[in-house]
Image 1 (tube, helix red, strand yellow):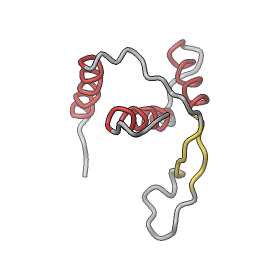
Image 2 (cartoon, rainbow, N blue to C red):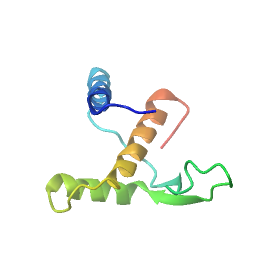
Image 3 (cartoon, helix red, strand yellow):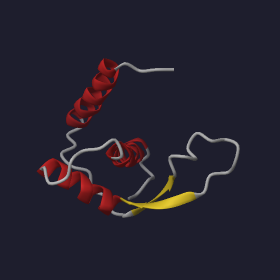
Image 4 (cartoon, helix red, strand yellow):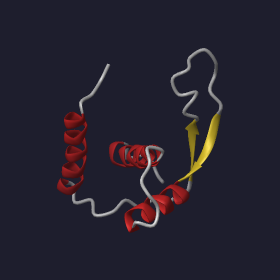
Length: 99
């Protein structure tokens, strides 16, 4: 399986377009902690994964420093962005979900 960079770019553009159409100017996170599975375990189906705790506050702090230019972007930050997208999906897609 593969995805081309142009396809990935288009998907991110669609996400932003949808949020703008829905008049989403910001996303309010009412909780800090979330469950996560380590990168090494996410595709290893030979054993049960052990979840770890992540922090939205920490993720947002690091992403803010990247935007300010005080910290360089790295591929590790994709996980932070993925978590933000997952929380947005849960908030917008499930009216019973509260964070």
